Image (cartoon, rainbow, N blue to C red; front, side, top):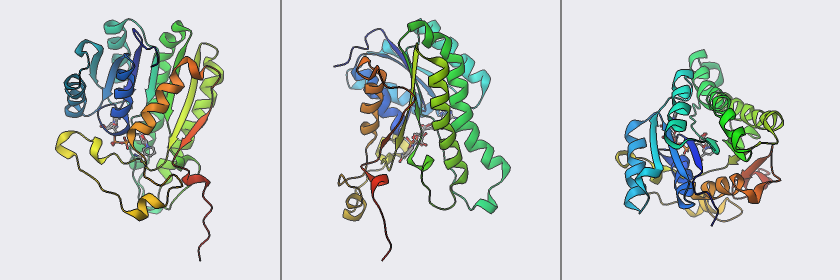
Amino acid sequence: MLNFKNKTAIVTGGGQGIGKAIVQAFSHHEANVVIAEKDEEAGKEVIEWLVSKGGNREAFHFVPCDVAKEEDVRRLIDETVEKFKRIDFLVNNAGLSNFKPFLELSVEEWDLVLNTNLRGAFLCSKFAAPYLKQTHKGSIINIASTRAIMSEPDSEAYAASKGGLVALTHAMAISLGPDVRVNAISPGWIEVRDWKKSSQRQKVQHSERDNGQHPVGRVGEPEDIGRAVVFLCSGEAGFVTGQNIVIDGGMTKKMIYEE
Ligand SMILES: NC(=O)c1ccc[n+]([C@@H]2O[C@H](COP(=O)([O-])OP(=O)(O)OC[C@H]3O[C@@H](n4cnc5c(N)ncnc54)[C@H](O)[C@@H]3O)[C@@H](O)[C@H]2O)c1
């Protein structure tokens, strides 16, 4: 058990998917958790879910927030400090993708992906950093993607945003150290459909082919990422900063020759 009692974590996009599992992981280690979510239904639901599992309602706070908007992020930080008095951990998880042929991708569509995935992480980190520094053991985790380092066709905006996030990670690690460590996690294929808000949740069974193409023999789960986030935020990872940790069941290490 890690000791996060009286510590506060902000998780963006914490209402569904990987973010929800990250919120659960912090809660498991007794941290206070602020869920910064654009989807109000999802943000409120995740708190009820955690309370139904025995979580302390007072340890959670939902802030409706679009991470791409400076005024929303300023309010997120103000509300967090007002409620919990400190910020120890920030997880920049909110993200979206738009896989569309490159020649058809509009400037507005490019901007939406970049503004959510990259500008959002910049804004949250910038306004949280003074408080993270005060703790002298602050930690930022950026949720990037294996698509930062390899591609399928039609993924330019998403790949660029995640590549930017990996670069932002090592830049901030140098600027904010030694008080704040900054790391990225690059997930591979993580199945999130059964971690959506209840109105959109789906039970999913993966085929042998889906599972078998992963060297570990299965598709990833949001909890695989939640466990890594709390480890990287803990003192156990005190010598780790500026890194991009790939969690993909080994997929990016597999050499593929077409027959
Ligand atoms: N699922 C995967 O296989 C996978 C793989 C690699 C990386 N990722 C990354 O992990 C992160 C989480 O992905 P997921 O699969 O859980 O997605 P998801 O869509 O299930 O959840 C994302 C959450 O972020 C919220 N969100 C979106 N835009 C926001 C904004 N502007 N402000 C605040 N909240 C916002 C959404 O409402 C949603 O609840 C993303 O950054 C994604 O790029 C996911």
